[in-house]
Image (cartoon, rainbow, N blue to C red; front, side, top):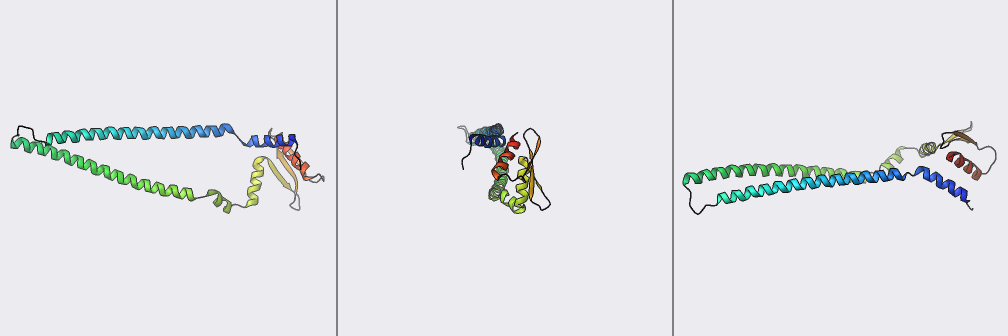
Length: 195
């Protein structure tokens, strides 16, 4: 069965009405912006951690220098005083390290929970669940209505005519009782839908 150029153009116009490249482009731009923002935030956190590590390294180096005995041996009181200061700094650092380790363990727990949730989301197929919950006929009728086609049944529950909402908003009626071939009905339906 050959298809005419006008039929092909009508079909392409119908497809064009459904596809919106601007919306797809905006979605891609938004995703790129979100990724860039996330990368900037991560870089900022890494830089902050790096500067904190440098500061801690300086404190550690300072503690090492002050812990070594100078060439002139200090008095016992000065030595005891220096040890007390270092012990205080050591306790402070140990507490800081313990707090940081607790935070790392907490974040690792969160990460494990999030990975498990992500795995469950990847395994979950909402389309299959939705398909199980819905009747296929009702879903097809909803799709037809969304496209602008609303079947009108007769007393025997057969489709006697179809209401077609055109792109202009006008409503057209296509009767199926005049004996025309299915091909002509299809052409009329799409013609009215594209009008």
